[in-house]
Length: 140
Image (tube, rainbow, N blue to C red; front, side):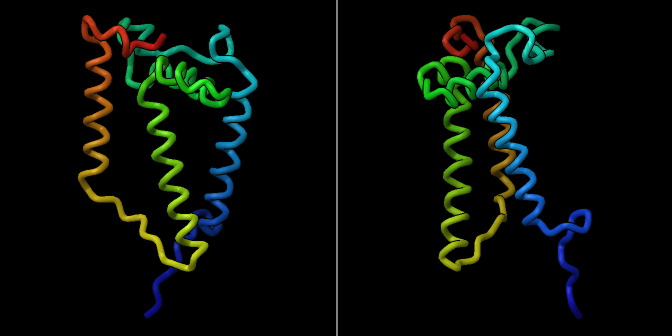
């Protein structure tokens, strides 16, 4: 008995990864050339507009813009979760690419506790950044 190959819309996963990578590069290219600090380029945060509270992602677009322009200090000031997030993603991708290039198999299995832990940390960050006295965590 043979197992059917995983085909998404008739295309191989390599094409889907290539399309996702191309879309990511295009989005980063747009962001690098359109300053989010100038009004009118991007929509505002819905949670901030309706409640006055910062969501965990508030400042993330500006932090990414700052990282694209080499300003790591400002990126941390905008949203301290963004630089470590991009570093973690880059390390995971590099690990898988190097292992595949060396001919080793890689596993995409994620421990079941990891998404829960990440979700709890993000929610906790969203709460803490809105507490009195925690203005250092608000988007600058």
